Each structure stands twice: as C-alpha cells, then as structure tokens.
Length: 428
Image (cartoon, rainbow, N blue to C red; front, side, top):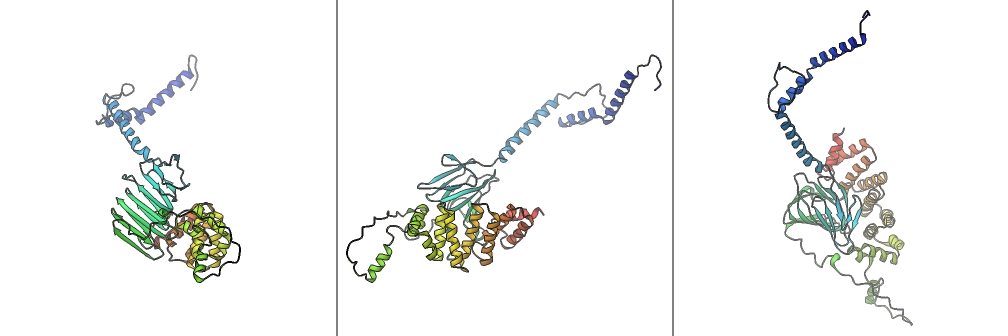
C-alpha cells in the first residue's frame, strides 16, 4: 500500500482484518449451525436461508430442551455413579479391609456389606474378602462354617472360594462349611440358586433351594440331596465340648506295678492328659492345638508324625498364625514322604502360603508347578493351575500367563478361573 498524506494505514488495516474475519465466520455459518442445533433440540427443523440480524437468539422452547437434557444427565449420573463404587464392609464394629484375614474366636462374627449382603462366621472359622467391586465380592473361606444372605441385583456377582471349590452366587441364602483336615465341603441352600465348580462336581453344577451338596474329597464322592445334611454320628467337633486337661498327679514312690496289655494301652492314651493336639485341630481350636503340639515337642512331632498328621499339624500352625511352623511341617512331609499324595499336597500348601502371606509369586508358581507335576489329576490341580495364571500375571509375564490360561481353558473351560483366563487371551 502506497502512503499518501491523510492516509490512516493502521485504522484501514484493522478494518480489512475485521472484514476478513466476518467473511470467514459467514463461510463457516457458525450462527446458522447453532440455530439449527437449537431448533432440532426443540423438535423443529432448520430454516434454510433465514435472515440473521445479529447473533441468533434461541427460541422459547430451547431453554426447556436444555432443562430436559440436564434432567436426563442427572438421572444418568444417579444410575451410573453408584455402580462405579466398590462395596465397603464391616467386620463386627470395625471397618473391613480387603485382603485381611478374618478369624472368629469364641462366638460368631458378623460381616456386613454396603449393599445389604451379610455373612456370619461361626466360632473358629477363618476367611477373608479377597476382592470387592460394585457388583459384589470374592470371599475365601479357609476353614470352618459361614452363613450368608446375599443381596440380589441385576448385575450382582458373588464368589466364595472354599478349598479347591468355587461357589458362584447371584442372590441367595445358604450355609457353607469346609474342613481342610477332612477335605469335606457342605453347602445347604435355603433360598435362590448357586453353581459350584471343583473336583468331583465338575464345572458349574447347579444347586437349588432346599438342596444340600456334600463333597468328600478323600472318598472321591459327593452327594446332592433334598433337605438338611445327613446325620454324621456324633455332633461336629466344633460343638463338642472338650474337657480341660486334667492335672498331672505327682509320681508315687516305690516301683511301678507291672503293666498288662490293657494297662499299656491306657498308659499310652494317657501320656498326654486331656485333649491331644489332634483333638483340638478337629475342634477347630488351632491356637490351643499349637500350644499342645509345642508342649509335646513340635520338632519331635515333625520328625515322627505320619504324613496325614503333618498336614494336620501344618493346618494348625497356619490357622493359628505361625507360618514358620507350618512351613516346617510341610517341608517335613515333602522330605519324609516324597512321592506320596500328602507330599504333593504339602507342595500346594507351600505355594499357597507364598502367594497369600508373602506375595512371593515366583516361589508360589514353583510350588504349584511341583504339585501339578506330581498330581496332574489331583483334587487341587484346577486350583493350582488357576493360581499359576495369577502368579504369572502379577509378575508381569503376559506370555506366560496366556500360556497357562490356554492350558486351563482346555482342561477346565467352566472353572472358577475361566473368566480371568479368557480375558487374558482377549488381550492378545
């Protein structure tokens, strides 16, 4: 631009810029787009060619449309936001923590969830909430009996891990018990329905209201019957009172009388006055069982006890919070009874202790692999392979986790770890 006297180049330049912006805005037809959007929201149609004298003003119906839209958003927030929150729960009067062991001592212990679901652990039972989300929770019952009333919603999903079994629940009322010593599961279903997976019962066996499922792993059989569980002779150990240990009388002076065969038997039975550590384990009184075992000589027991007794001794130690003693008993079973079924179970329990208590996933994977190598068709094989998937995933070995997931789905397509295995394979 050539400058002459009287020119105001800065003002002219600003006017040119202003015209250019107006032309650009007109080309984009922003105001027309806005008006058409508002009219569509109000149920009308755009008005092609309508004159625009300044900024377009929304019609009287547009505010109502925005109010309706805001109301719809509010409803969606009310529906969606609660579903994103994980359940909370209390144990007795205290706030519950996911992953923390819960042990009922001398009286039933209530566990209450924020969705209205309630559990009650019987005396001497032991459990923990493994995971919790908006739809439900996964609860591990390690020993003893619990009563559950699960609140049902359209999306609720609850799982109970009981030994090598998985109980899938939507909404129901039931009693569930597991004896790790006897390897017996009892499920009494009062209302609703559940699906049980695990050894002997297979994948997703349905149990209906009024039915009782009993699984006897050692006997390799199960029973699904109507009504209450069958009577099992004397009352269960947990309800059978055990007399306190009688005081030991001072030794009498003089020679002891000659022992007859009957006297020898009585003397052997009275060598440990009062309940033995085995009796106390049968009664789920694990702290007292360990006290009795220590009094008898724990190291001597580990060196002389049978394979079955070593597993029982390990259970007493684990459930009384003495993992080092449990490891000693299990290691003794491995070394003294190598190649036996009990030795294989000892490997599984060593793996579970490494996984649950120390978060040592590499060690846990090794022990679960030992069990599978020694008992590929054993009652704990499904759980061992599922735990291997978890170990590898937690260690960041994606390819290893997927390899284990494929093996698991080939053998247990409806097993309790099947959903996790499928999700891993879908990420490939």
